[in-house]
Length: 297
View: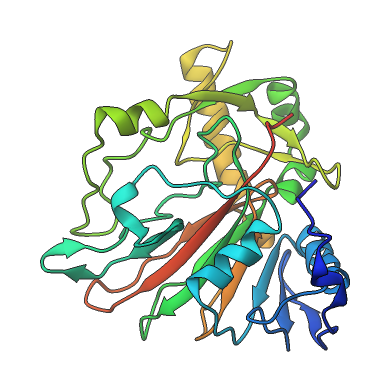
């Protein structure tokens, strides 16, 4: 369970905000909430439940500082520090910069984050519970983010495919597709030996159980999953290809079109997501905090 603060937050006034579900398979927007103000425990509990119910919540019209984003994120659990230290926000290492902007010829953030469907940090022993992405600078076109429910994907698996993955485990590696160029002109920085040591391959169940809701969902993705254990290599490739094709069907997807002031909080235990990219000449900058989850089971 996330770490819920029981401090003086109880004495803060209740905020009058609405939770409005989207018509898509997942997602809801939260309107009228100011994350720059302290949240009492009742308001926090409503947000926590909305996150479990809808898997993606969009906080509209936020004007918060990096420290306020960190403090709010930390109420859900321990924050994870990204391996690409050069893209961490100065004086706030909990914030990872996702951006295509260059200053003095050098990228200020990771320019191609989310280029394949993935669940954040599935390559870690303790994958992410969830991520919060806060819009800092948005392009005039493009830049949408897609979210696909892996619980609905599992629920609708063909019987033969469900049987093929029953009880199976898969390996995940940060470097699986690290060097692939997808967004034109963007190359990732070479990892040092110390960075490689932080991201050694791990093994997780192909189907995981959500630790808070008990729902089962697929837990493989085209970005980080390398193979299924204990099956022949060609069979592993075939099963994974079928899972990937099924997992991103349109009926499982919410497409987020970013607005100024948006902060989006998604559940990496229940979803995969994808960045659609934007024209390279248009500036985009986002700040991400990532909350540590549990060992998948």
